[in-house]
Length: 151
Image (cartoon, rainbow, N blue to C red):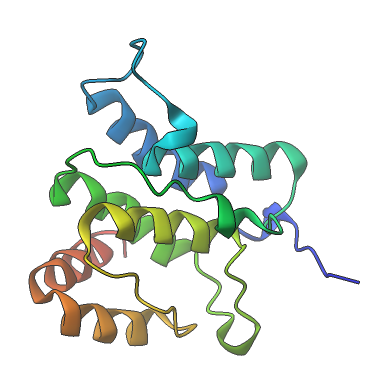
């Protein structure tokens, strides 16, 4: 049997807030062309809202439903606060890390908006920053700065 963790382990609202800001700044927001299920940020937001409503942290199989056709341009400076919040909420599960955890789903969606490749999450924020720096030093520096603001 799969052990599904509860959402009371993290502050889901803290992750929802920066995503809502990204949506509000989007030119397509609240128009007929807004398609949350086909949007990286919209998918992450809906996943977090679902997890909060159901009181769960893992959504089995959700990784397979991340949109692959979102070609909108995202500004790195808009994504970084949301990405930083996923790092703050991460429980650093390490070997017990689940790609279907809403934190991981959100991080993957956000990476898809600004990085060429997803970073295999090593279960540690420090190691994540190290891997991020190898792919994009500027994004890693921005993320580290944003993480320091939150402490």
